[in-house]
Amino acid sequence: MSAIIIDGKATSLKLKNKISQRVASLASKGIIPGLAVVLIGDNPASHTYVKNKKKTCEALGMRSDLLQFPETLQEDQLLEVISGLNHDPEIHGILVQLPLPAHIDEFNVILAIDPEKDVDGFHPISVGNMMIGREAFLPCTPHGIMKLLEEYDIDPAGKHAVVIGRSNIVGKPAGQLLLQRDATVTFCHSKTIGLADYTRQADILISAVGRAKFLGKEFIKPGAVVIDVGMNRDDEGKLCGDVDFEDVLETASHVTPVPGGVGPMTIAMLMENTLLSAEKGLA
Ligand code: GUN
Picture (cartoon, rainbow, N blue to C red):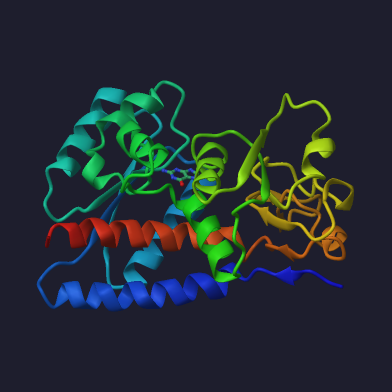
C-alpha cells in the first residue's frame, strides 16, 4: 500500500485561516500584530525564507517590518537594533534570520532578544521553559511537526521516535517535544555509527540532515511515519528533502513531501507565535 502523503500546505492553510480570524478580532481592538524580521547579508536562501515570512504576515493582516543590513554590520550595531525593537510597542515578535555572518556571535544576538518577543523560541528562557514543559514560544519547525502529527491522528505516546540531526533549531527541540508527548526518543547525528540500525527501529522518523534524497527505503521500518525537514537541491537543481520520497512510498505509512510538507508549517507557527505575543498584550 502506498503511504499517506502528509499535506503540510493544506494543514498550514487551515491554521492560517484561524490565525487571520484572530488577527481580525485583535484589529477590532486596535492592535495589529507586528513581526520584525532582521536580515543581514545576502544569503539567497535566507532572502527567500524572509520574503515568504513577510508575504504571509501581510496576507494574514499582520504587520511585517523587514530590517535589512549589509554583511559588514557589526555585532554592537545589531544589538542596538534589537534593543530598539525590544522597546517598540508595535512590534510583538523579533526574528533575526540565521545564519549570521561569522563575525557576529549568534548566542549574544539571541540573548539580546526580549524573551516576551522571542517568536523563534531560541532564547535560553524559551528553551528552558519548553524543556520543563511550561508555557513558552515553541520553535516553529518542531512545533509545526507536532501539529502535523496531531492533524493526522498520529499519537507519539509509546512510539519510538528517531530524530536525525541535533541542531538547536530543529533536532533537539523536535526530540524534546516528542518526549513530552510520551515518545521514546533516540537522537542520531553525523557521528552516529550504523545509522540504519537506529532508523529501522523508528515508528516516527524525523530527518533534519540536509542531504538530498539521502534516506531510501533501506532506512525505513515498514509502517513508519516519515517527517522530512530537509530542504535541498537534487542533481537537476530541483527542491527536494532528505528522504527519497518515491523510494519510501511503499514502505512508510505516512510521509511528508518536500516542498509542501514541513516548510509551510514552520511559517504558520511563526505567525501563530507573533499573534500569541500580541494577544498577551491584551491580558
Ligand atoms: N534559519 C533557518 N531557519 C530559521 C528559523 O526558523 N529562524 C531563524 N531566525 N533563522 C532560521
